[in-house]
Length: 102
Image (cartoon, rainbow, N blue to C red):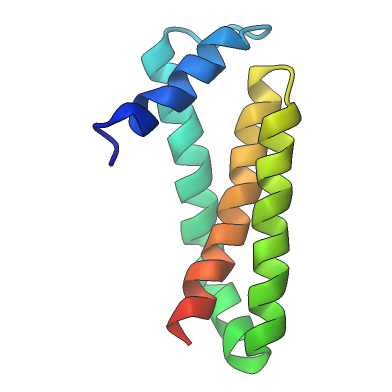
């Protein structure tokens, strides 16, 4: 999927919201992808424990966090806010992945 348009789209969005210069488009796409994956990987073990104890509630809260991160990305005015929204979405997606496995 990263070789399709979706893989290139976040970098183009970051390049167009360049109030803060993050460098070329490729660097912006890398920072965007890494923010989401880093937070998802770091929080997945703890959220997996929470999903084991509170299965449906933890999954519902994770979906809300993921949606909140998507809203932050949608209303962002600069690159840092966009990357922060991706990090919040990563937090939610870690919970969704753990909740789906339980």
